Picture (cartoon, rainbow, N blue to C red):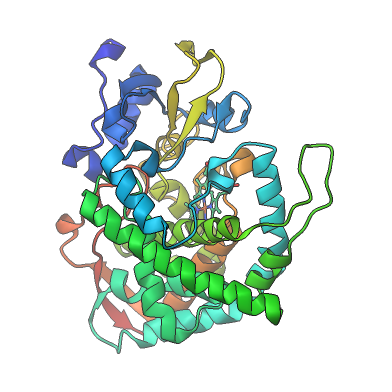
Length: 425
Ligand code: HEM
């Protein structure tokens, strides 16, 4: 078989439901596959999909050659849609690029400033809140034998955790959920122009909310993340990082990034973990007997599910990956999901094995300078979630496992619906 025969159609439902045989074929036969950019929403761009663990890691480690300035999906909008979006943002603040889509030294500045506010201490302090939220969510099952796990646990937990960091009061939680949904609406999905405008309108509403919260803290500083973000400042240094604090559009962009990156990814991980544990009762029993296994189970869940299946990089100079020449200006799709199923690194990669060797070699949180800012938070949430579930639930099984379906985003992979039959302890 020649590499010409290998294709990857992200819109094909068979591929969406189970991309892993396709990824394997790519890794084995065309580890650098040139694709039609339009298939991944990159119209008119030369796009190369890189699928092997070793190559993905090398690319992530070299931000000079492989830039993160891949822009937002707005960059691909038609001129008419862009004009409509401009009208919406006339009522808000400009959508500026920060951390995820920046390179050094700008990325270094954002990452250091945000790290002054999003500290390990602030994350660790969330533990009792997250435990309480998990307990309340299980209380909300009301001992019912059948539970909509996605609606009642996986989706609300990360939204409540991020809302707690951002100090969003209970009275605004429904709005916060709406804003979170609108913020991810266009990520890795093709949506209509009207849907896009509705989503951007919600985002402007969110901007107004957070600007008012930031202004309150300017007048009356609190011991919280928003105050620290507002006051974060660095001494100028030799890496080209200036000493300017963040301005309002930058803070809004960072808040939105934390909200977007922190909600759907973690919800997808929780859903896949619940399904895997329901389908591997021996693993569930081991977890109930030894809740400290939760850390291992979460790492294997991250590897197995890779809720962020891939992102982009822009090639800054003519280069080569795995023997394939890639010209300057091309776009690369770095496939974390494929890398984490690479049998060059993980034995029997499609199986869910928390005791596997090289468990920590997964790159579900990325690698290098863009390594996930929220990794510690995502781990804390999911480990506590498993511990609480294991202390409250005796048995779980998936209702109609054949009807489990993944949504169609090629970036954020997650189940659309998870119903469980449960018995309680
Ligand atoms: C299971 C959950 C999560 C997964 C799988 C995940 C995955 C990732 C990945 C793969 C990257 C690297 C992107 C790149 O290489 O360009 C990343 C970056 C990032 N993540 Fe996460 N993430 C998760 C949870 C979170 C949470 C809870 C937060 C909230 C704080 C968060 C915030 C971010 C931010 C802000 C970045 C950009 C960092 C930078 O560019 O320096 N993520 N995440």
